[in-house]
Amino acid sequence: MHPTLAVVLVGEDAASRIYVKRKLQASSDAGIASREYRLDQGVSEGALLQLIDELNVDHSVHGILVQLPLPEHIDAKFVLDRIDPRKDVDGFHPVNVGRLSIGHDALVPCTPLGCMRLLDTVIDDYRGLKAVVIGKSNIVGKPVAILLRQAGRDPLLERECTVTVTHILTRDFPQIVRTADIVAVAAGSPGLVRDDWVKPGAVVIDVGINRVTGEGGKSRMVGDVVTAEMDHARAVTPVPGGVGPMTVACLLANTSLPRSRCAMSIEREQAGCRLIDVRVSDLRLAARIGADVHEMDRRQTLHIAATLSLVSVPADRLAARIRAPADRLDQVRAMLQQLKAGSCLGYSCDRDAASWPLPRINRLDRAEWQCIVQCCDMHHLGRR
Image 1 (cartoon, rainbow, N blue to C red):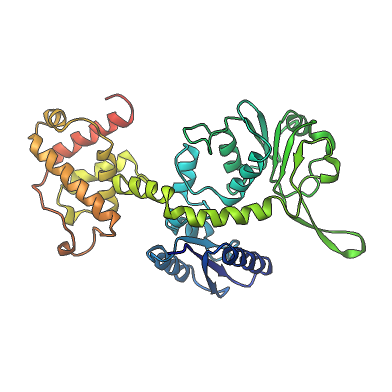
Image 2 (tube, helix red, strand yellow):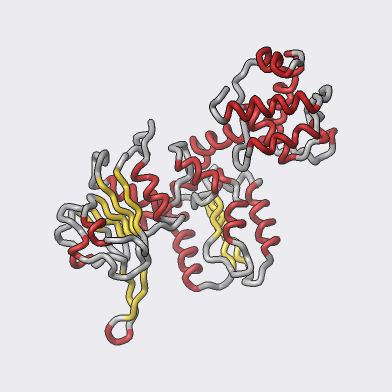
């Protein structure tokens, strides 16, 4: 089966239509199937979320992209968070952002990933190099900084630069940039970086795309860097060209990647423990719901499953602390394992009990649950 990319466009924004057209054409050229979903400017947020939910469970769709910007009446953050992280080819979902920040397999935002691929063509060893990132947006600046300072077992992610992130309020701005071996500019300010900002031999990545009016009233596209003044740099990316085409290429790569290692890694963690919004304090809710899975609220159940899955205390030791038979805790653990497997397969705690392939177990009393909570608290705080 060929990978399939679903692109959602809301409204009639001219620039967005052009970007979507280019992405769809690039997908076709690369042998990736694509589907375009055009929604009216006035579409409700609920209708958009319903479409995303349908795409999330459509096994023939491997990547979902919602073209930004969205109309003002729609919360873009809420919409992007609704996308299944395994299909989040833009790499904006909190799960992917969090996994990237700690060096795990993740779908990396396309533009930052493109920047790294461009840098890889001229830099063999990043370790110890000084990098300055101009701009701190969630889309470019922050992920570029993470990728540049990333350390890990994956050689594609390991760079270990010394990174400084600058922004509009940074003091001694030019002097800081002048120290950098790598300069990544994503400020959205045309012509911001001039020749005396960049030291000889530095590598400059210009992410800026700005349309300015030139002589005769004609508009043209320029970056955040005055490229004509960068003869002393080792390399500099042009605008247009450079980062733009590489961003599209990385989008296509992300569309194929969800079918392989990254998706399996995310799915494995989701099956083992739902860490997306887990807080240990929420486990205290378990004290009043007991251990009958059919009476548990879905969110509460996932909190319990996630946190207990992190507790490495053997059942007999934990049983001794809460003065309960070890086989009861083994039974709880077995139930949670089935619960997590059921969650991965799409079962819902609020469905009819008959749809759940899970056993009923005797209710643990309040004191037992509270003691388990205490053990979990100690485990997370490193005091166990």
